[in-house]
Every structure is written in structure tokens, then in C-alpha cells.
Amino acid sequence: MNNKTSGNIRVLWLIAMVMYVPAVAMCLNFDVFVPRIIPILLTWMILLLLPYVLFQKRWLYSVAATLLFLDGFINLFHWIILKCPLNASSIFVFMNTNFSEASEFMTIKMTPLLLLLIPHILLFVMTLRRVPSLSLNTKTEIIVWAVLWIYMAAFLADNIINNRFVRLAVPDVERAFVSFFNESNAYKALKHRPLYDLDAEIQTNDSTLVVMIIGESCNRNHMSLYGYERETSPLLSKRNDIQAFDNVISCNSSTLNSVMYFLTERNVENQISIDTCIHIFDVFHSTPYKTYWLSNQSPIGLWDNGVTSLAQNADNQVFVNLMASSSMESTQMASYDGNLFEPFVNALSDEAKNRLILIHLIGSHTQYSKRYPSDYEKFTGAEEYEQKIIDTYDNSVLYNDFVIDHFFSLLDSYSETHPDIRISALYISDHGENVYDEGAYAGHDYSGTIPHANVDIPFVFWFSHDSLEMDLHTPYMIDDLFHTIIDMADIKTDCFDDTRSFVNPNYDASRQRVLENRQLY
Image 1 (cartoon, one colour):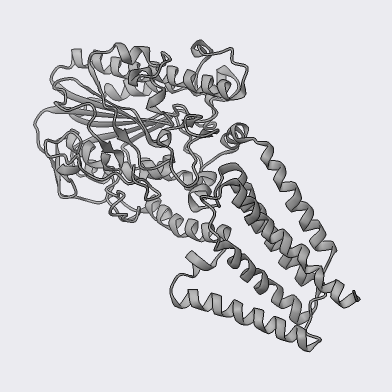
Image 2 (cartoon, helix red, strand yellow):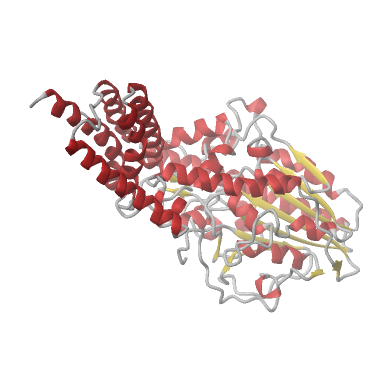
């Protein structure tokens, strides 16, 4: 084999590095793997090598190889951790995550499969050391490269002409970032948009208090209130003044997406842009209602966190967790959900005739062991790693039971001293959590099919006066919660749809429940 042929064969190192990622992806989760990524990667490899072939500068080859390596490394890491290609949702979650949360996430997601990154790095090193002799010095080389460039141009042009360039002609990582930046523009606009002045009015002369408790990462199938074999919700189970509905789901697996659905008129069917759709504070600020946002979630994150951008429209905002979303290592610095009791009592003492109080808990957010004081470490002693994780999660659910029960008890006491005020309260979780319920992993991420554990959530009502005359198995999806909250507040406005309100006699329970990935529940 002559030196020229040997020099050309060195390009196989680059091809091997690029193809290593889809090869691993196919093995990790073949059901999710899309074969089209192979011609896409080859097309972009040809495009990036074009300057080197034309100008014969070694640094041009190094730049091309480095770009291809970084693209592959990011996507490979995502495949190993989440068993699917990088997507815009993952970037949003990462950008809304602080160092403490990231550390907790990696602790629970740590896997020996991360060793698969090493061959990719070694292939990159060999790619840089074995620079191929790619040129246009012979007729054969000219023909080969001409064919490759014609293929590349035809592939890219076809997708551009048919308006599918980003969707079908761009590698996973770049496509995810394009989608991320497109969506992020809407969140930036939301942060700065003024409240809409709507035609809305209260339909009752009674003093009204509406309380919504937004939990975090609570899978109702881990609550004894819903039949779980462990006694994780003993306090709620003893109450005779609540209604726990057992067929309610979230359509999303992340806090940001879930909250942006259920606190706005946006839903799975209409997909209205988040910066132009009507949100819950537009409605309530168009009436005499006074609004509160009490949170144990950190306000720090992407543009001060997308949820915080929405919460900033409340008349009163209290964030008790200004350090991080973690409960920290020290009990003295812990930010447990019980820290919200005092702000809630203060909000109850407000003499406004009509009030909306939204409470955002940290609930059972990973890392589960940091979500409860030592007094609630009831489930212990496991030796297997998976069972230890389950134990800590169940302990967090047990503490959450105390928190929710105490909120309801505070409302009960308040109602006794204020019998003239009509009070309605609802506890939900933004999404569920898969703690080895479906598959050998814990978290609320997914690849391909969304586990029911990710979306099965608690849905518990407390009323000071009348209860709901409804079957506890009535199906509902909380992207329509916007309408339910308006109905609970007795507000009349054009954006309200009574068929989407769970508490309305006209509620349509036959609605098809489609999840965020277009999967039918």
C-alpha cells in the first residue's frame, strides 16, 4: 500500500468517531433511535471537510474533527444518561438548574455506561494524530469528491426547498439548540410583557379564597392515600374533609412545561405561544382579586427561571429558598416545604375580600433524601441501591403528607373563624416521578414512551362549604387547570371554557388525553 493510499485510509478514524455515537445509541435504545441521523452526520462531515480538501491546511482538518467530536460527545452523554438524543426540553431543564440540582441529578443518574465516553475520546485523539491526505491531485480524487459534494448539496437543498432543513437535515445537538433558542425568545418576551386587561368580573358577592398547592415530582402511586402498600400518607388518609381523585394526569414530565400549561390558556390542542397566550394573572388582575405566590423553589435560573417570570405578576411574592433548590447538607440551612407555613398564615391574615394564593413546593424533587428532616426518615435499612432510592423517595412523600395536611388544617382553622368566606383549595403535583416503577431508573425523564409514573399525579380538593358531586375516578389532565382555577374563583371571562373546568357541571370528561410527545395516555 503506497503512502497516498495509506494517507487516504486515515479518514476512517474520523468516520469511526462520527459513527460511534449512533452505533452506541442503537444499542442503548433502538426503539428511539432514528436511522436518518446516519446520512445527516455523513453529510455534515463532508461539508466540514470541504475547506481542508480545497486548501490543504492541517488546522482546517483539526477544526472539522473537533466540531464533530463535540457534537458527538454532547449527544452521546445525553444518550447514556437519558437514553434518547439531546432535545430542547433537556436544554431548558439544564438552563433552569443550578449547580446543586445538577449534582443531585448526576448522583442519581450515575452509571457505568459513562465509560462509553472513553472510546469516543480515544477515537478523537487518533483522528487528530492520523490526519488523512485528502486532496484533489488525481482524477480519481476529483471524481470521488465531486460525487460526495453533489450528494451533500442535493441532500441539503432538498430539505431547504421543502422547508424541513432544521427538522430533517441538521444533527440532533444543533437541532435541539435551534429549537431551544426559538422557544426561549417566547420566554424572554413573557418576562417583559405587561399584564393584559381583560373583560372579567366576579360572579358572587361572597368573600372568596382560592388556594392552589403545586407539588413537585409526586407520583400518586407512592401515596398510601391512593393504595400504596407503605404508609406514606397517613395524615391525609385520616382526613374526612378531602376528595382525592385517582385518574388525573399531567401531560408533561417537567416543571417548566407543566406549569406553563396549567397556569395559562395554552393546552395540548391549541399550542398558543407562551408570550401571547392569556395566563392566570391576566385574569385575576382584571378583577378585584389579590394574588399571592409563595414558593420554596429557587427563583434563580434561566432569565430568573421561566416559572418565576410568570410568578412575578402576582401582587405578593415570597421565595423562602434563595440559596438553591436543594435542602443543603445542614439542617440549619435546610429549605424544607414547612418553611412556607408562616408566609401562608400571613397571606391568610390579609383582609382583601377576594384572594388567590398559589403555593409552589419543592416536594420530592431529586435528590429525595434532601427533601425531608431526619424525623421523617421512616423507611431505612435497605442494602440494595435501588431500594435505598425508593426508601428516600417514600420518606419525601411521607414528609409531603405532613406538609399538605398542615396546609389543609390551617385552612380548616381559618374557616372556623371566618365562616363567611368561601374557601376552596386544591393540591396537585406538576408531574409524577418514576422511581423504578417502570424500568430500571429513577427520575421523570423518558425516552420514547412516557411512563405512567411520570404523569400520574395526586389531585386533592378541600372545600370549606360544598364538596364535588363527582366520581373519584373521573379522568382529567391538568393542562386545563387554568379553567378550573377561574371557575373556583367564580370569575366570568371570555377565555374561560366550562367544558374544560373540572369543577363545572358542563365538564367534558370524554376529552382524549394526549401527552407532550403526542402519546395517548
